[in-house]
Length: 318
Image (tube, rainbow, N blue to C red; front, top):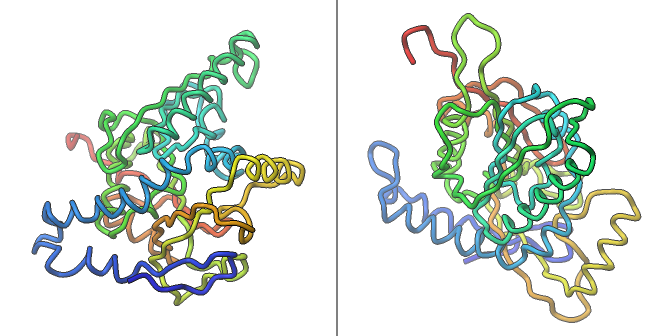
């Protein structure tokens, strides 16, 4: 049963520790460390309720609060060379598509409603490029190339070792077991190119962001040693409140809050989203467990991040 977890938010987060314990019980894992079909079905059903179903319900409201790319993610995208092909897994409303108009990006998300918002955004981007004469950021590059589709992050439909880079921002922390989180990273690594040992370049990189447990200085107040598995509330505001909130946020010039709004004067629908809060070093451990290599890692804006890549192969191994 979910119990309250201390947080300074208007609505408290709830502990999901008991729920996750049932999903990861010894009987739910085989001797090889993999989950049997029944256990996987239980985890999938839990995420349908506390992740996918929630985002389908709040998609317009959520999309309205997600319009400003994070600087570090934008910097990673701008560092990609012209003509590179990349993936945005868990693209949401597609706010990172078109950040670098000299690369081609394919966005995927589990939510059809969010993909509908992303598709609208990509059409707007392409219209803007056509109106500007098809120039890239340097005035003579390729026109922005983007496409989006509905896809499960655990069963990505992309060609193996085909992408030059991938990003996955605020997605993997929604997977309810560590096995599934590692599998999600494994899927990302499967999609990017593997470089050749002894040669520079040619190795695709994956940028992953997840919520951190260590958020003692934020309004959420989560700290080292606290619970890592939580149900975090999202209050679905009325359209009038949403518009007022958007105007206020944009006037301040900052990003919108993750859990918008203070306690409402009359009841608004509240949805509980599952999160696994990553402790320091855990994301790097998951990359290594997925068979990847850690290129760089760090902490930014209450998130842990990592740039991962496949281990380089020797000639004749591919």
